[in-house]
Length: 346
Ligand code: GAL
Image (tube, rainbow, N blue to C red; front, side, top):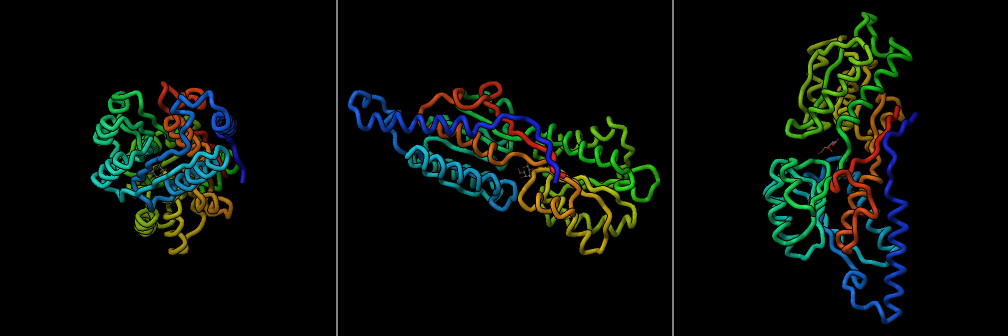
C-alpha cells in the first residue's frame, strides 16, 4: 500500500507531555501544602459523556475505540481517573437528548456528541448551556448558527472537501499510470456509478461534488451511469450495486463511494455476481476498508488519522474537565474547529 499524508498537526505527543506535566504538578501538590487552594489542581477524576449517533457504524466505532485508548493512556500517564460513559443513540435524536440529560444529571464535566440530526443540535446545546457543561461535537456538524451560540462548543471532524479531492486524486493518478485499468472497454471514457451517504449529512454532497470535480479538473474523461443513496451502509450499497450490475451489464468501470463501508458493499455485490475488473474507491480508511485495499479488492481509500481525531476530541474534553486552556494544547480554527489529517492509501 502507498500512503500520502495531508495535514500534519498531531496533538498526541504535545498533549501527552502536558498530561505528564499536569500529573507532576498534581503529585507536588499532594506532597506539599502550599497549593491546596486551587480546585483545578486537586481534581483527581473526570467524567465524560459520549453519545454516538449509531453504534453499528464502522467509522464511528473506529473513533470510539481510539477514544477509549486515549482515556486509558491519559489515566496511566497522569493518574487522573477518567470515567468515559459511552452511549449509542440508535439513530434517534430523542434518545440522544435523553442521554444528554442523563449525562448532565450524572455530573459529567464535558459531553462529546456525535449528533443524530445535525440540524437539531440546538436541543443538546440548550441542555448543555443550562447545566454549564461544554460540548465537543464530532463527525456530524451542527449548523454554524448553533455553533456560535456559546463559546463552550467545539467541533472535530475531517474536511469533506479535502477527502473528496484526495479520492479524486486516487483515480487521476491511477488513470495517468495506466488508463486501461479504469477504461477497461477502451472506449476512451470511464463509466462510473456513485454511492452516496445520508442526504442530510454535510459530507455526502461535498464529497460527491469535489470528487467528480477533481476528475474533471484533471481532464480525466468520465461519464456517470447512475448513482444512489446508500446511507453509509454496506448492505444498502450492496443491494444498489446488485441492481446496477443487472441493469447495466458490462458497462460499469468505476464505483465512487462516499465511504469505505459502501465501497465494501459494492465489492460484496460484485463478488456475488462473479464480476471482476470494476475499480472501487472509498473514504475513511476503516479497518476493513484498509484491509480491502491491501488485498487489492479496493483501488484506494482516503484514510483519516483516527488516532489524531480521537486525540483531538479527548484533549479538548480533558482540558475542559480539568479547567485548562484548550488553546495551549491544540490549535483550533476560530477557537472551536479541528480538522483531522488524512492521507491517500492505495
Ligand atoms: C462520515 C463517514 C461515514 C459515516 C458517517 C457517519 O464522515 O465517512 O463512514 O461514519 O460519517 O456520520
